Image (cartoon, rainbow, N blue to C red; front, side):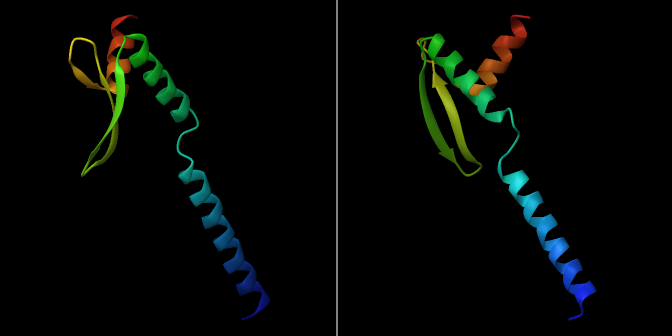
Amino acid sequence: MNTTIKSGVISIALFISVMLTGCAGGPAGATSMQAAAAEYCERLGGERFTRESPLGTGRYCRLPDGRVENEWQLYQSEQLDNH
């Protein structure tokens, strides 16, 4: 393999590696958003739990009145209602 082709292959491999590493971390604010939703559940007196499904893992909040809501959806809907 000549030097130009070898250099091109290494550049492509490096680019793919960087792109995959960036994607694996997820959005930068996702962790803080999840933490805010979890904190909101607890502030409401809810009990947090994780539920597995064929679509993946979901985080839920069992509220004192017995309702079970997805943590993020609960946080998002309540925050939108209060603005």
